[in-house]
Length: 183
Image 1 (cartoon, rainbow, N blue to C red):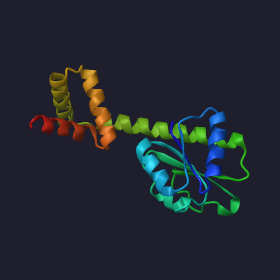
Image 2 (image 1 turned 30 degrees about the vertical axis):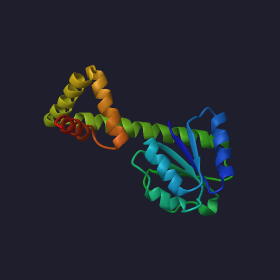
Image 3 (image 1 turned 180 degrees about the vertical axis):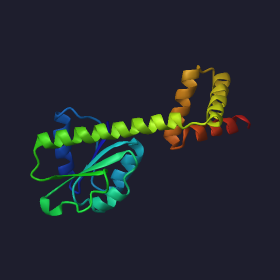
């Protein structure tokens, strides 16, 4: 699972990264600005952002407003900086001084929550496909299988990857494949 650590001071970010790495977490991205964090979130798609009260270009609250759908924020700061509004279920606050056990247990719960919400969305998307959508997706898979000698699972996986990479739905990606095949 993806973890982004965003603190104004890069040494703070590196310290948290080191603690989490020793705790068995990997694939950690560190940054010092909200813009860098948002860019990393866009690239990763889901996960948890661990940040302080202030980043080099914005406050945690400004970053929280722009959190993508499958991201949650863990804000770590002194008690006097505690958030007044926790932005629904997207923001969790831990006061300093911080115990490692509290950090790990909170992070684990947040990562499980993100995973669960992604699974729910995926199941809903599968159930929510109309017969027309399925027909379009199957037509695109047929084109890929014929022209690129793919198996059905390979064609489906290819469509999924293209959809994720371009940030479009599976149906929209299938429509693009169909329209490109007509050229």
